[in-house]
Every structure is written in C-alpha cells, then in structure tokens.
Length: 167
Image (cartoon, rainbow, N blue to C red):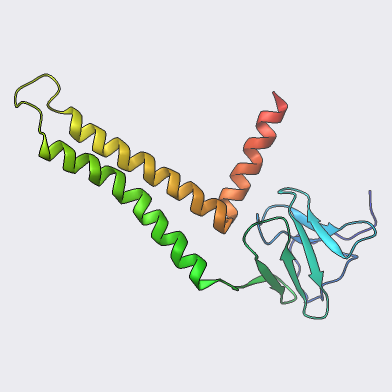
C-alpha cells in the first residue's frame, strides 16, 4: 500500500498535488490518485484518467468524448463548464427528433388508416405509439447520460460491471 494520504472529509484547505488522493469528480465515489511516472490521476472506482494542471489547480478527464474539467478549490471540485454550445444544441435537437418523430409517424399512419372499430386489434395502434415513444425516449436518455457522464449514472454503470465480473 502507498504512503499516500486518503482524504475522507478534509477540514482544512489543501492544494492539488500528486502525493495525495482526492474524491473523484466524475463518479464522486472513488478516489483519484497519481499514476506512476505520469503527471496524471486515475480513479480507483470508475477508472477514468485525468491530466492535472497543478498551476491552475484543475484536472481534465482524458478518456471521455466529452471534455470535462474541474477546478480544485481546496475542499471540493468545481466544474468548469467548457460546453461547446453548437454540439449541445445539435445533441438536444437530434434527441428530440429521435424521441418524437417515430411515434408521430406511427400515430399519423394509425389515424390515416384506422383499424376497424370493434375489432380484436383496435387497441394495438395506441400501444404501438406508446411503446415506440417509451423505447425512443429511453434510448435518447441513455445517450445523454453517456454524453454528460452524470455521476449517479457512472456509479451505477461501474457497480453493474463489477457485479457482472463476479459471476
């Protein structure tokens, strides 16, 4: 085991350095500590790799498609939002279209060519529209969670991977 100090709940402010461990800013569950022979940190839980800028007291996640940066204030991490507004708008527009368009097409076709009233399958178009919306909404929600790396989602994903490895 390393001589490195683990920081359960710090009470005094301290600067970011490679000799100590800190709470992971992504999953907020594991500890990030320095990698041997590198100016980088790695999380013991979610396994993300961070490059550190000790002058600015910040870390940036390197193994994600979303460039996320956090600044260390001496006690906790503060997110530095470097959001690419064009990409964010495109992601949300594509998500809205993927969620609304397929169920709308099914709904339009079911009202253009309605089933015979009183038939055994009269209820099916309503179920089909509902399932299409639910499925597409779930898909878009999952993609947004993957893109933004929400801490609760990352924690659940890592725990599920650990559970599946045990079997």
